[in-house]
Amino acid sequence: MRSNQLIKIIIIDDHDLLREGISARLQDVPYVEIIAEGSNGREAVDLCQRLQPDVLLMDISMPVMNGLEAAEIIRETGIKTRILFLSIYDDNEYIQEALRIGANGFVLKDVSKPEMLNAIKSVAQGATYLGPKVAASLQKGADAQTECATNYGLTKREKQVLALIAEGQLNKEIAYRLDISIRTVESHRSAVRDKTGGGNAARLAKIARDLGL
Image (cartoon, one colour):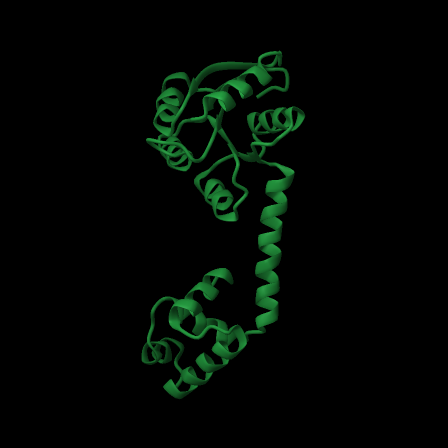
C-alpha cells in the first residue's frame, strides 16, 4: 500500500460507546475511511468477506464469536485484510495466540490517537505493530522464561528427560527413547525435581512448557 493511499477500515467491538468513540476519533483523519462496523466476530468475518477492508480493527472478547476465532477464520479463507487487535488484555497468552493466528498488530484500548494511527498505518503498509505496553509485556514474559531456564540450571540430558515427562512418558519409555538405563532416568528425574521444585508430573509438564521444551 502506498503511503498516501486511503486506508479502508472495519471496526468490530461489542461495546457501542467504545466502538463509536473509535469511529469518532478517526472521522477527521483524511487517509482513513471507515466502511463498516460490527459487534462480534461473526460479523467481522462476514463484513471482511463482503467488503475486503485494508484493516480490521477488532476487539478480542466478544459474544457469538470472539476476535481470535474470527481472525483464524479470516486467515483460513485467504482474505488479505490486515488484522489489528485493540484489547484491554496485555496477557502474553492472548498476544502470542493472536500473532500465531496471523494478526498484524496488537494495541491496548487506552492507546492514544497518535499511536492508534501509527498502528493502523504500519499494519496497512505490511508491517507488524505492537504497542509499547504490549511489546513490554512480551519482553517481560521472555525475560522471565530465560531467567527461569537459567536459574534451574538443567543439563541437556535433564531437559530431554523433562520434555519426555511432559509428553507423559514413563521411566521405562524414557530409558528406551534415550538409550539409557531406567536407573539413570530415575536419577535425572530426581535431579530435575530438585532443581525445579516440580514434585509431580503435572507440575513438571508445566515447567517444560514454560521452558519451551
